[in-house]
Image 1 (cartoon, each protein chain N blue to C red):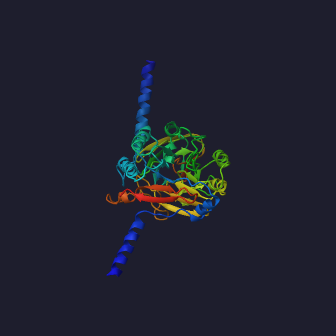
Image 2: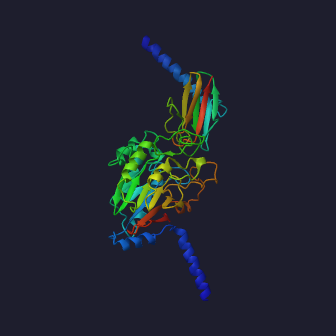
Image 3: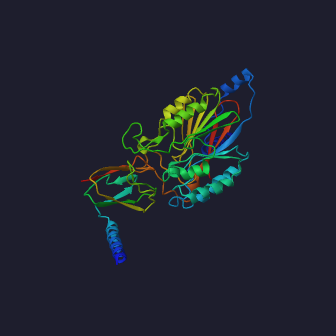
Length: 313
Length: 110
């Protein structure tokens, strides 16, 4: 009897683990060393990442992406704790149209949070090199829309890697269809983090992953190694990306990479389809289990951030 | 009189372009490039000077046909959208999709 209960509890636990992936917890080492040094403990906070809302998309498997985006905002509003801010990691729109940007902004106005930060995806900039995007969301940014800010001891950097995409079918720098950071942005980044202490937790957000996931699909960013080299001295770096419409993660030294789900449609994992793009044959009753958002929390102890993904259902 | 001649010419041009568009709808058009599965097919197309080439997007994703040197640019091609470009000067015209730059193709005019 008790054996049975134990098994049931175990299964329950497994089911819970399957609904949200908790993959990086606050590292105790840094926290305790801070205590030894007598550093003042700052209170933690949480924020939400949403991505790839593709407002304007209206084909299989999702003919109402505005609705699923609204549902993601409803999920934000249902959180027990109001997030300090929301970060949208791009592909806000599907075709960079003014009305698509307006719809997205209108829905996000209803989010229970004090601030929303945006970086563009290639779908937001490909018709006008990002002019419409910057008009709406570029306030307070630098260069072509790069930005950084500090919140309760954590330094946030928003990078843009979807401009000046270069033609390419071969391999090598600029010839592989990868995201592009560009030397101007790298110089800005170098200067931006110059004065920070190495114990400052860093969060980098950008649309295309900053590590190579699938070169055959252009899922990677040129010069990302140079960007990561500039962040090498920091004890905790969290990289949040979108673009791939599925959760992918990797830990490399002090850097944790993570990609978020889309709120519009899932994409195939590399190697399972001839090309990226929407998975068209998702049954209507399964769609919401492929879409979602990401909650990130920081305990305020200088350690790693906790990243928890959840689906719309 | 002069005005009438201009009108007639415009009508004639419209008629010609309409006719060519109608023939483009045929799947056998050798000067049509189909965008499907994130690729241009055929990826290399050789045409005579003065040929109008048409791209049609059969993917569920938007694409573009953008010349590497920006000499032509289809802008957004959503599903089913078409874009036509006339090629006169002999040479090699490399192009790609501005949204998915791994997608490349070339038009050879000779």
